[in-house]
Image (cartoon, rainbow, N blue to C red; front, side):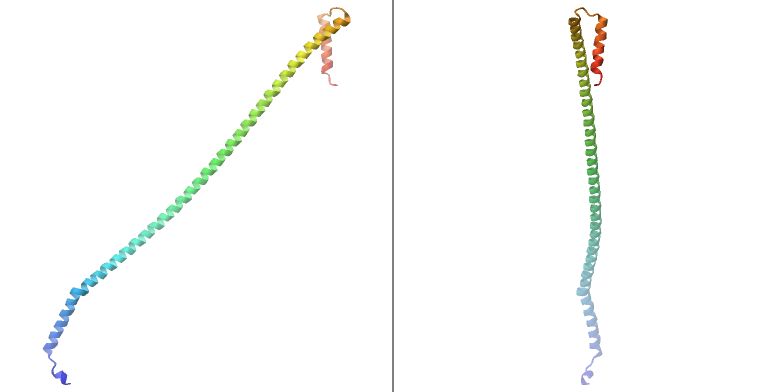
Length: 165
């Protein structure tokens, strides 16, 4: 208790003033700049996080757009492929039809040519048979055959040749 005797209220007041002055000085020199640095750092971190979130959202949107465009391109490619296959098939069918028509036309031409040649051969054969028959008739009969007899004789022979056996 003895120490309490030497307690001086003025010293206490000076100590209080020094404490407050020291606290204010520490606040002003160290604490306030430190708080400002920490607040700036917090703002920077918050802004960086916000920017990162916005960038992530933009990237997600770009990714969706990219995937959508890829799907659209794939659909277009499939459409182009299907169209090309359809065109190729149609072209092939058209070429086949044209080839069939050409073959049919050539066959008809060949058949017509054969028929013309057959008729010409028959006509030539008729003429030769008629001449031969006239010559034979002259030789057998020993006289000139009239035009009417000749025609009748040739007609009978042709009917005989054309008749089914």
